[in-house]
Every structure is written in structure tokens, then in C-alpha cells.
Length: 264
Image (tube, rainbow, N blue to C red; front, side, top):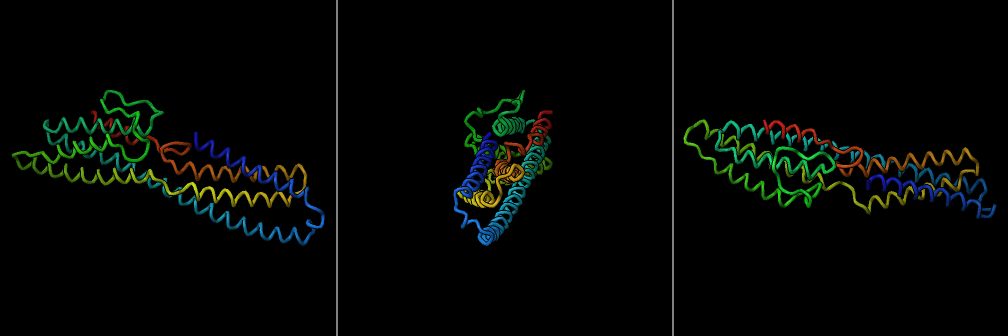
């Protein structure tokens, strides 16, 4: 919802800038609207447009790359969870309590990260009402420490299960790295200050557009198309900053598939 609100704010600001430019053209004396002055304005506007287009393309590319990395990290995290559970399953009944905690962890991640989707059924997990949608959760960190201690405490007398215990420890270490990668992905790549500066540049561009266009219906339609187009680009950039919500949100399929495999 915040992404949609941001898009509406962008659209409103750019529309107001264009309207201000049109009104300013009507307020200015005719000697300020000579062909030479308009040509100079066009040169400055072309510079602003080129610069804004470059910044927007770079930000869109950066946001898409960060989103794709978050998607890959989440899928790798889910896959490593299923692999760790399989290792504990092969170890034997002694690892069943640890497997139960691992399922609780997975269910809690699903419930907290995708709160608008159906909650996992048939698995008990900590209360997720106060857990952040992205980033680290103290409750889940405590649960991870318990799982870590239990895996490190696996000590079987036979060689086969000793090797399995070592394999489970290695798998848990890999999972912990992937978990922190997912946590770091939630920090985003943009700052509010930078977004505000870009919006300010775009407002200047549309003020200059308003100064140049004639007061005709076709010119107003073209200007409106430009406002909507640039606002949609800004919406995509902001939406990609929140990989687990909005129009382009990462789905919960990989985590739900991992939980389903762990519950068999």
C-alpha cells in the first residue's frame, strides 16, 4: 500500500510542477517568451532530461539487480533448509526434536514474511505478530541458537552417524550464511534523501515542460502521459526496494515447498 501511495504522491508532484510551468508561462511578460529565450530553455531542459533519464535507468537497473539477488537468496535459503532437514532425518530419531524446531522456524518465517497469506497449518511456531517482515527477528535468532546447540551435540557411537552429524553441521553452517544473506537483502539500496532529490529534479523538468508547451488540449494530453509514465517508473523503483511486498513481491512458494518437504 505504501508503494501505491508513493506513486500517487509522485504523480501529484509532477502534475503540480507541470501545471505551475503552464501558469508561469501565462504570468510572464511576452518579452521573456521570445524564440531565443525558449530555445535556451529547451537546451537546459534537454540537459535535465538526459541527466534524469540516466539516473532513473541506473536506479531501475540497480533496484532490479538487488531484487533478483533477494529472490535467489530466498530460494537458496529454502533449499538449504530442506537439505538440512533431510540430513537430520537420515541421522535418526535422536534428531527429531531438532527437526521439529527447524519446522517451527520455517513456519514462523513464512507467517512473518508473508502476513497477508494463509498461515502454515499443522506446525507450532512462535508468535509472529511482533516479528519484522524483513530483517532479523530476536525470537527466531534464539530458536536458531537452540537448533545450533542441538546439532553440535549430536554424538553417535557408530561411524556412519558420526559422518552424518558432521554433514549436518556443515549443512547448518551453510544455511546460517544464506540466512544472513536474506537478512541483509532486506536493508535495501535506496535512501529517502536520494529518492527526494530525484523527484526534485523531475519536478524541475516538468516545470520546464510546462513553460514550453502551448495551452492546447493535445499538449496537455502529451504532458499527462509523460507524468504518468515517469510516475510509473518511480513506482517500480520504490516497489523493488521492498522485495516481500508490493506488486513485484517475492512469493512464498519456495519456503512453503521446503516446509512441505520437511513435514512428510
